[in-house]
Image (cartoon, rainbow, N blue to C red; front, side, top):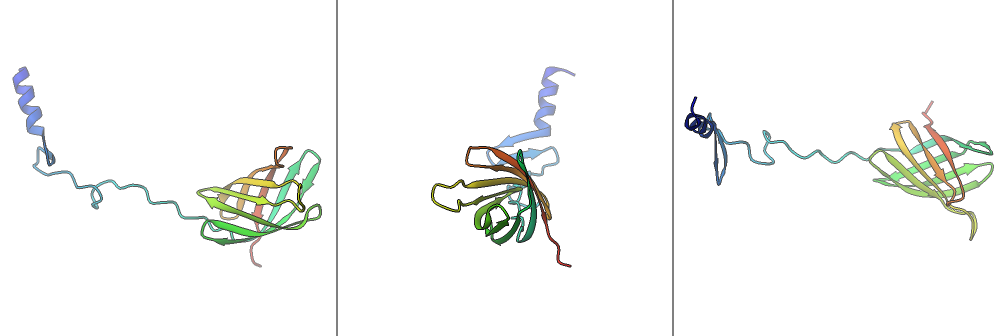
Length: 148
Protein backbone atom coordinates (compact mmCIF):
# COMPACT_ATOMS: atom_id res chain seq x y z
CA UNK A 1 0.00 0.00 0.00
CA UNK A 2 1.35 3.43 -0.92
CA UNK A 3 1.72 6.38 1.43
CA UNK A 4 -1.12 8.16 -0.37
CA UNK A 5 -3.40 5.14 0.17
CA UNK A 6 -2.56 5.10 3.90
CA UNK A 7 -3.44 8.80 4.26
CA UNK A 8 -6.73 8.29 2.46
CA UNK A 9 -7.58 5.30 4.67
CA UNK A 10 -6.73 7.25 7.83
CA UNK A 11 -8.98 10.13 6.75
CA UNK A 12 -11.78 7.70 6.01
CA UNK A 13 -11.56 6.18 9.51
CA UNK A 14 -11.61 9.39 11.53
CA UNK A 15 -12.46 12.86 10.31
CA UNK A 16 -11.94 15.68 12.79
CA UNK A 17 -14.30 18.62 12.37
CA UNK A 18 -14.80 21.76 14.43
CA UNK A 19 -17.89 20.00 15.86
CA UNK A 20 -16.16 16.83 17.08
CA UNK A 21 -14.89 13.58 15.66
CA UNK A 22 -16.82 11.56 13.09
CA UNK A 23 -15.96 7.87 12.97
CA UNK A 24 -15.87 5.64 9.91
CA UNK A 25 -19.47 4.67 10.67
CA UNK A 26 -20.46 8.34 10.62
CA UNK A 27 -21.44 8.50 14.30
CA UNK A 28 -20.22 11.30 16.51
CA UNK A 29 -18.98 10.49 20.02
CA UNK A 30 -21.54 11.15 22.76
CA UNK A 31 -21.42 14.67 24.20
CA UNK A 32 -19.95 15.09 27.67
CA UNK A 33 -22.47 14.39 30.42
CA UNK A 34 -24.66 12.14 28.28
CA UNK A 35 -25.39 8.55 29.30
CA UNK A 36 -22.93 7.19 26.73
CA UNK A 37 -20.09 9.55 27.65
CA UNK A 38 -17.80 8.81 30.58
CA UNK A 39 -18.73 10.93 33.56
CA UNK A 40 -16.85 12.11 36.60
CA UNK A 41 -16.95 9.85 39.63
CA UNK A 42 -19.74 10.79 42.03
CA UNK A 43 -18.64 12.25 45.34
CA UNK A 44 -18.06 9.60 48.00
CA UNK A 45 -20.85 9.26 50.51
CA UNK A 46 -20.06 10.48 54.00
CA UNK A 47 -19.44 7.53 56.29
CA UNK A 48 -21.87 7.30 59.22
CA UNK A 49 -19.90 6.83 62.45
CA UNK A 50 -22.64 7.81 64.91
CA UNK A 51 -22.83 5.52 67.92
CA UNK A 52 -20.82 4.19 70.83
CA UNK A 53 -17.26 3.04 70.18
CA UNK A 54 -14.82 1.06 72.31
CA UNK A 55 -11.28 2.24 71.67
CA UNK A 56 -7.97 0.65 72.56
CA UNK A 57 -5.14 3.21 72.73
CA UNK A 58 -1.68 1.65 72.92
CA UNK A 59 1.07 3.88 74.34
CA UNK A 60 4.59 3.12 75.53
CA UNK A 61 3.19 3.32 79.08
CA UNK A 62 0.35 0.87 78.59
CA UNK A 63 -3.06 0.54 76.96
CA UNK A 64 -6.09 2.72 77.64
CA UNK A 65 -9.67 1.74 76.81
CA UNK A 66 -11.80 4.88 76.41
CA UNK A 67 -15.45 4.80 75.35
CA UNK A 68 -16.31 7.35 72.69
CA UNK A 69 -19.86 8.39 71.84
CA UNK A 70 -20.06 10.01 68.41
CA UNK A 71 -22.90 12.23 67.20
CA UNK A 72 -22.80 13.13 63.53
CA UNK A 73 -24.37 15.78 61.32
CA UNK A 74 -23.11 15.40 57.77
CA UNK A 75 -19.33 15.38 57.91
CA UNK A 76 -19.20 17.07 61.34
CA UNK A 77 -18.81 14.96 64.46
CA UNK A 78 -19.16 15.83 68.13
CA UNK A 79 -19.51 13.70 71.21
CA UNK A 80 -17.90 12.54 74.40
CA UNK A 81 -14.74 10.71 75.36
CA UNK A 82 -14.70 8.83 78.64
CA UNK A 83 -11.74 7.10 80.25
CA UNK A 84 -10.35 6.46 83.71
CA UNK A 85 -7.36 8.68 82.98
CA UNK A 86 -9.05 11.66 81.30
CA UNK A 87 -12.60 11.48 82.71
CA UNK A 88 -15.44 12.68 80.47
CA UNK A 89 -14.47 15.27 77.87
CA UNK A 90 -15.95 16.67 74.68
CA UNK A 91 -14.67 15.78 71.22
CA UNK A 92 -15.14 17.56 67.90
CA UNK A 93 -14.00 16.73 64.43
CA UNK A 94 -14.98 15.54 60.98
CA UNK A 95 -15.22 12.64 58.59
CA UNK A 96 -13.73 13.03 55.11
CA UNK A 97 -13.70 10.08 52.71
CA UNK A 98 -12.26 7.17 54.67
CA UNK A 99 -10.61 9.43 57.27
CA UNK A 100 -11.84 10.20 60.79
CA UNK A 101 -10.28 13.13 62.63
CA UNK A 102 -11.25 14.49 66.03
CA UNK A 103 -9.71 16.45 68.87
CA UNK A 104 -10.08 15.79 72.56
CA UNK A 105 -9.75 19.27 74.03
CA UNK A 106 -7.49 19.84 77.05
CA UNK A 107 -9.17 19.48 80.45
CA UNK A 108 -7.74 22.83 81.53
CA UNK A 109 -6.00 25.83 80.07
CA UNK A 110 -2.46 24.91 79.08
CA UNK A 111 -3.32 21.19 78.99
CA UNK A 112 -2.55 18.85 76.12
CA UNK A 113 -5.03 18.41 73.26
CA UNK A 114 -5.16 14.90 71.82
CA UNK A 115 -5.69 14.65 68.06
CA UNK A 116 -7.01 11.35 66.71
CA UNK A 117 -6.60 10.66 62.98
CA UNK A 118 -7.68 7.30 61.69
CA UNK A 119 -8.73 5.34 58.67
CA UNK A 120 -12.26 3.96 58.49
CA UNK A 121 -11.70 0.30 57.61
CA UNK A 122 -15.36 -0.74 57.76
CA UNK A 123 -18.67 0.47 59.18
CA UNK A 124 -17.57 -0.78 62.62
CA UNK A 125 -13.75 -0.47 62.63
CA UNK A 126 -11.32 2.45 62.65
CA UNK A 127 -7.54 2.43 63.18
CA UNK A 128 -5.05 5.24 63.42
CA UNK A 129 -2.72 7.40 65.45
CA UNK A 130 -3.14 9.80 68.37
CA UNK A 131 -0.90 12.85 68.58
CA UNK A 132 -0.25 14.25 72.06
CA UNK A 133 0.25 17.82 70.83
CA UNK A 134 3.74 17.02 69.56
CA UNK A 135 4.86 15.39 72.82
CA UNK A 136 4.41 11.81 71.69
CA UNK A 137 1.96 9.56 69.93
CA UNK A 138 0.12 6.28 70.20
CA UNK A 139 -1.86 3.93 67.99
CA UNK A 140 -5.54 3.23 68.38
CA UNK A 141 -8.21 0.82 67.23
CA UNK A 142 -11.90 1.62 67.59
CA UNK A 143 -14.77 -0.86 67.34
CA UNK A 144 -18.41 0.25 67.20
CA UNK A 145 -20.75 -1.35 69.72
CA UNK A 146 -23.70 -3.08 68.14
CA UNK A 147 -27.16 -2.97 69.68
CA UNK A 148 -28.03 -6.26 71.41
